[in-house]
Amino acid sequence: MTGTAPASGERVLVVDDEADIVALVAYHLAKSGYRVSTAASGADALDAARRERPALVVLDLMLPGLSGYDVLEQLRAGEGTRDIAVLMLTARRDEQDRIRGLSLGADDYLTKPFSPQELVLRVAAILRRVGAGATNATDTLVVGPLEIDTAAHVVRVSGLPVELTPTEFKLLLTLAERRGRVQARAHLLQTVWDAAPDIQTRTVDMHVQRLRAKLGIAGDLVETVRGFGYRLRAPQSRVT
Image 1 (cartoon, rainbow, N blue to C red):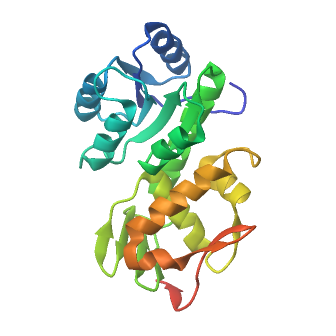
Image 2 (tube, rainbow, N blue to C red):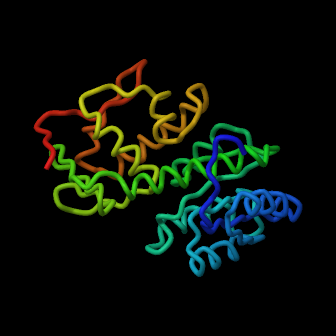
Image 3 (spheres, rainbow, N blue to C red):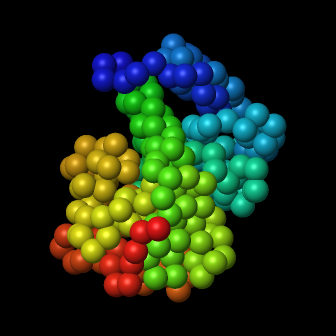
């Protein structure tokens, strides 16, 4: 695994009803230093996530009983599980399936068949940005009604807290730190997702759409610059 530091023992939950895939993924993650748990159904996945609080879930979408979409939705709705990172693993290649998963709050997705090495790299990239979101500078960024407490990892709009996933928080923080300047989709992929600049720009669009919806009256601060990317408007902004 060139270019990656050894994992520091974070817990990863692998959810898939195909035993050979579970064994393959678990082997490569454990070899890279992660503590691995497994589940073969949606109900078992939710039980394990609530009990073990993993740092990340590798989640197959086609599961018996509760689908991966159902699991993702319940994870994001639960107070104790909403901050768990999720990497979707799916045989479905249709764009609408990926968009649905991203719109429900997945942090990234990987289609089957997949490279185990790529999966481990993506897990590491997601966990790096989750950690970065929690350990950035200690200032509070204020832009109009929007407040971003980078130390406490808390976002407020007009004084009311807004629940964001780790990736949504990192995206908002990136735009806020560069407010007034256009951020290309490719640049956001590299900065927020640690991704190569030529892949899956739709991922950025779906996360911006979710971010705007969650920010409510502050959502209009996130502007689309057609043909380029996004920026956070700077009027009346200040840093405290």
